[in-house]
Structure formats: structure tokens, C-alpha cells
Length: 367
Image (tube, rainbow, N blue to C red; front, side, top):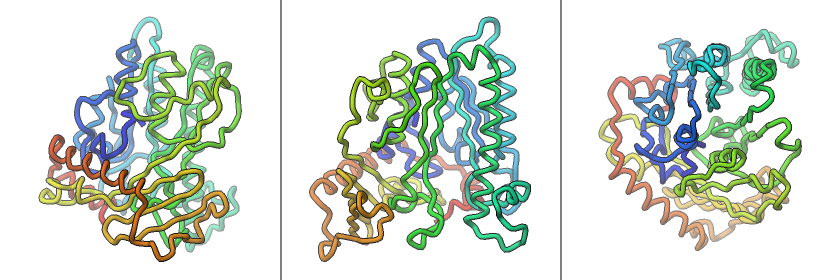
């Protein structure tokens, strides 16, 4: 989202691996143009000493207030806590003093997320029973409703401030989808099937962007160049995403686009593993071209092919007898990713401390 680079380029392919230092980013670019930048994150894996993201922001607050995973230790924050922290920053003028400066505020909400906590106060409104045996999908729905309530508080504060309401661009997106039993899978991050790839992505700027929906593939790496484009600012040459500004402004049609994906193992859980964690962590690669999706599992050699236009739920694998042979385009993508992972292992060695490793395990980020 911030560096507009693929994982094999920025290096943070797994929890416990830092972003390569010194990279251009959306936050850094805005800071160069007079913006204050602040982040409020609520997940242990985004702590600066684990992620390396703190160097991109003027203020980087780790709101680690709750014992979400089995009550073991404070490893995350609730949506309520994060909104409270962000609102306090906004109400304080963002610590800018005097005349209000333009700013970038990133609030990273961790829920909805495993272990799918049940918010009983919201369950009844969703038609979910009050019994103990509540399905995981239903618990997830209550987490969505809970996050929605507190994101709504943040947006209401923006809309209630005339200065902010007049000229604030709001971007809403997720860093991943979630499998809720489709294909027998739960969670995210380990495969490239549609439930894990499809995310909400919306931009709202009253008076600047017309309401509407674009039915074309977009990626998280597009967000940084698009925000800069909407602000009339140049994007760094290193950015790899697509600037949707001309399409959003009605000056261009959505492009025919080939999109590329990669999936990696979970957290780095030993200091010994860290030395080659990027190269050895690659699980799957995928390409989508005109609705045709091809997935290749690097270790086992399994190949899947789907026609997303006619089979969006990926129920019919079209690979057939060629299951072990990826296409030429996917082989090219694999080569690029592999070279990038090897380079990142050399240039950005993982320095994961023993305390962080233990907490990553406790948070459920184990294999």
C-alpha cells in the first residue's frame, strides 16, 4: 500500500521480516510536500522493530492494548481503542500547532481477524443466536459489524469538522481477504484462491470524485500512485502500481490488465530460519489475464487454472493433465520473484529478536 512494490521487492514477505530500509513511499512523498504523517497500528506484527514501517511516518503509534489471542499478553488493539487514539490526534490538531497543515493519517484496524471473537452486543442485530455454539462465520460477521461501528466514529468526526469535511480524501482498503471454509480453507495468506485475494477498496472525496464502481482489477500497490495522482503530485520512479486518476476523473477507460500475485509462508519463527526466510518462504504464484487465472504451487508443483468470468467461485479446475507445468508467463513471473527474494535476503537480513519470535508464535502466526 505504501511503497507500491510487490513483496519480493520491498522484502517484508512474511511477518517478522522488515521492509527494506530507505524505500520511497506514499508517506515519505507526502512529507516532502509539507504533509504531517501519522500511523496508529493495532497488531503486534506491525510494531516498528518487527516491520520497519516506523521510519516512514512522523508519528508511529503502536496501540497494543488487548489480550486478543487466548489472553496470553497484549498483542493487539480493538477497533474502539484505535479510533479513540486517532480521534485524540485529530482533535489535538495532529500536534501540528497553529494553522492546520495537510496530513496523512493511517489507522490500521486488526478486526475482523482470527480468532474471530463474538461480539454478543451486535449478534442479535445480525440475527445470530445467543448460544455458545456460534459458527465461525457468524463470529466473523460480528467482528465486521464491530469494526464498522468504530470506523464509522472516525468518519463521523471527519464529516463533523467543516474544514476536514470540505477537503478530506478517505481511502478504505484491506491488506488481504479471508477464507471462511471455501475450498476447505480458513484464514488467509497461504494460497491465492479468490477469497484470499478479493478485498474492499474504496476512495471517497466529496466534490472531487463522482460516486460509482469500476469493474476492473485493481491492486493494493495502486493506492499510493493513485492518491498522489489525485493530489496532483508526482509518484516516485520506484512505484509499480497503476495510477487510476484518469479513470476516476472520466478521462480514460479502465485498462485491460494482467495482474500478478504471490503467497508466502507465515511468520519467521526461528533465528536460524531468518537468514533465508524470503527465498524459502515462497508458496504460490498466480497470474490473471482476461479472466483466466493460473496458480502454481512452488513446492509441490500443483497447477490450477480457472475461468473466473464463468466460474468466479473456482469450482472447476481446467488444468487437466498439465498440472505440473506452469505457463511461460508464470515461469517468467516465478523467475522475477525468486531473484527478488534472493536479493532481499542479501540486502535486508532479518534481525528478529527472541521476544518477538515468541510473541509471533503466541499470536497464532505459526505454520
